[in-house]
Structures are given as structure tokens and as C-alpha cells.
Length: 481
Image (cartoon, rainbow, N blue to C red; front, side, top):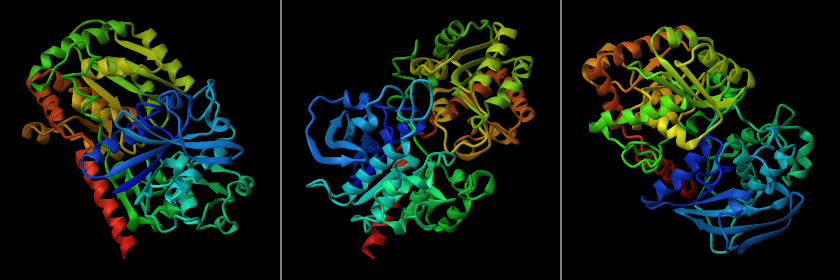
């Protein structure tokens, strides 16, 4: 089975969040199960620098304002089509904006180009390659399915995975004339969305199937609270909606072999985590004692509930926990957390920014990781926490609810608990969970049981890859019918 994946990010080449981890790990997981996935990605500078031999398999004299070409390359275990369009992607900054964080004003054009190429490849543009399925990810590649619907690939099965419904790619109606789509596409059942053009909406409309990255999130986005204005359309497509929880790369995230850690360990050698714990204390200037270290590894945003945490830091300290925060985002939240660190020297430490190696050390040395997200399509940091014996403390939403077994008394007695859930998602409920955590942490046997149970959980891509294959086969059967 040949599957074309279209994505704006892929690990390890370009990453701003969990989307890249998924699109980088899924092809590898599928490869061992008889599915060949090739991934179309933009030719950002870091991507173009990753391969030397550049031989175009397809060329565009004019693609959204300039010359472009497609290169077929293999980087590591990933088979890629790279869209080399310097006028769109050869820029200093992130994949979506400049170094100061402002979005590129022509993002509509950049990702229309990516999607147009995806549609062309789906229609057989590249000699010797014809995908059986096309799998798009988020708004940046969602228009691929619209180009397929109104082009040569109308009969090729497709699906879109929604990693976060909050990001939709909405643009003014004035861009429609430059998209290269027929006039009939600018209708309610096409790409039109509240008088403008909606990229994600167009993909949801055109896809043969829709997936989200957890079963609970698939149900949540059918409600006005989580549907972000698209719940009506999603409910119309409910029969085609599937929730498949993400996995993680268990080779990269493996405490027994992780080279970022000061000390490696396994479920039967948890005491070795102490050296990583010491490294966390040193990096965050925390006092050294037996109290639990609760960490945060997150974007500091409203969605992630970081304002909820920032408002109760004093209470976290009062309940006997230390706090280590790694992240960046909203300037006000950064300032609030840095002020808390100044108030509670030795009990709260904050590092503004992101450091991949430090994130591994925190998972390997902290006692717990808190994730108070208002909504969380899947979440990956709680899966890393399970793998590393860093006990997750999570809001009961989306993939967090699907992946963590709450340490209530029944689950503790049965030895199946893997973390702590709290609801409603407010400061009081979070502090109650922290108090529970501190109390259980004071019972070493019970705490070790939670850690080991989490480390036993299957957080790999194996089961999830099987579910994607089932869905691919279902779509192929519809095509045959």
C-alpha cells in the first residue's frame, strides 16, 4: 500500500510541536507493517541542507509566484518529497513566521502551494508514483484534499488528521482567485468559510475520513465548547470521524538508553533516577530534599492552562512540592512564573525557552509532570512521562483522559494507577491533585507502583499504526465499491 503524507513539519528535520513527532514516527511504524508512506514537506532551509544530491522529479515553471521543483530523497528512515520553492520557503525564521514571531503574511500562498503539489502528486504527476491513499495533516496541508476533489485525483481516497482544531487557516475571500481552483469551489460545501477561505474547513469537507489524535478529542470537537466553530460540519461528518491516539518513538524516548540523561535506568532500577534528579535541582537552582519535584515542559499559553498553574504556584509550594518549569510563550505568563521563582527561591525554578536535552533530563529526574491543558487533542509529554516514571498530573480532557489512569483509591489498591487526573480544570482542582501527589509520594511503595505501572504502558506507535492501517483499508474498500 502506497500512502502519500502531506505535512508542514516532520521530525527530526523541522519541528514546532507534536505534529512533527507524529509525522516523523508514523511512516517508520507503518513500514514494518507493509505500508510505504512517502511524505511531502516544504523545502525550508534546514530541510534543503539535509540532503546534498538534488535531482528534481517534477518541476513547476510557475508555482504561486515563482519557479519550484520537487525532489525525491531519503533521509534516515524517511522517504520524502521535498518541495523546493525558494520564493516561499527559503527564509530566516520559523516555518510559519519570522524570528520575532510574526506570521508570514503570505502563509496562505505558501501552504496553498504545498497543497497544490500534494494534489498534483495524488493525480499522478510524478512518473512511476501513484499513491493509493493521501493523508493530510492540519490546516497547512488540508487544501491538498480540495485540490484533489476539484482535480485529477478526485477518486483517490483521502483523510485528514486534526492535531489541533484551534488552528484553522482562515483567510479573506480575496485570495481565492489565486488558488487555481474552479469557481464552484468557492461555495459552502467547498472552501468557503464565513465569507472567506477556510483551509482546514475545506479539508474537513473534502476528506473521505477525518481523524483526531485521541478518541476523547474526537467526541469533544463535536461540541460548541471544543468545536471552534466547526462543530456543525464535524457533526455532519460524524460517521467518518475516528479518534486514534498518538504513540511516541520508544527508541528515542527510552530511559534505559537515552544519552541525554545523566544516568540511565529501567523500571527495576528506579533508584538511578536520583542522579537525574540532582541534575534538575542544579539546573533550576532547587533545594535538595525529599519533597517531590513537579515539572512543566510546555508552551506557556492559555490553551495549555499555564495561567491556571501560574495563579496557584504559591499553593503548589505550600502543599510541599517543588516546581521546575521549561517553556516559552505568552510574555505575561513568562513574567508571572519568573516572579514566582523569585518569591520562592529554591522551591521554584524557571528556564524560559526550549531545550530538547533538558526536557529529557526533566522527564528522567522529576517526580511528576503537570499538564493542566484546557483542551489537549492528544498530548505527548504525558506519554514521555509514563515512559520515564515521571508521573503525569493531567486535566481530564482529550488525549490526557484517554492515556492516564487516575490514582484514586480503587486504582491504587488494584495497582493499575498511572497518574493523577483532575476536574474541573481550575486552580482548586489542580491544587487538590498536587496534595494527593504529595501524600502518595510520601508512601514509597505506592509511588513506585504508579511509576512502574506507567512504564509498563504501551505508548509505542504499534497499536496506533494498526488502527491507521485499518482505516486505510476501509477507504480502499470504499473506492473499490
